[in-house]
Length: 73
Image (cartoon, rainbow, N blue to C red; front, side, top):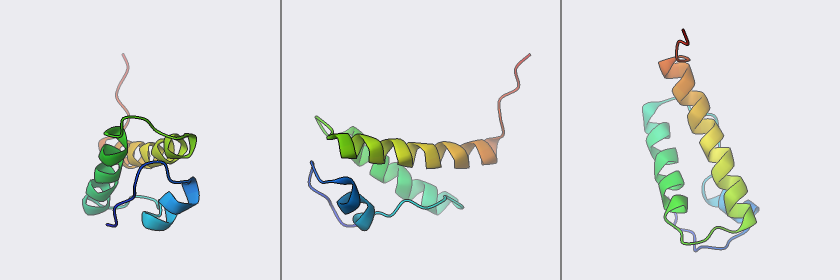
């Protein structure tokens, strides 16, 4: 994966790591690394926040499909 300096716009972030539906543990690991990279930045731009939110939604969707929804009693 190519490293992106902080403060890039959304389209630059997408060009470096295009968000796609996650269908494997390997793809999940790559998405986790990108989420972790963004979370470690001292300050996120609005575009970085949007990109992080999108990646987080993809991760959450994959995890819920693999783990199932928690049972509420």
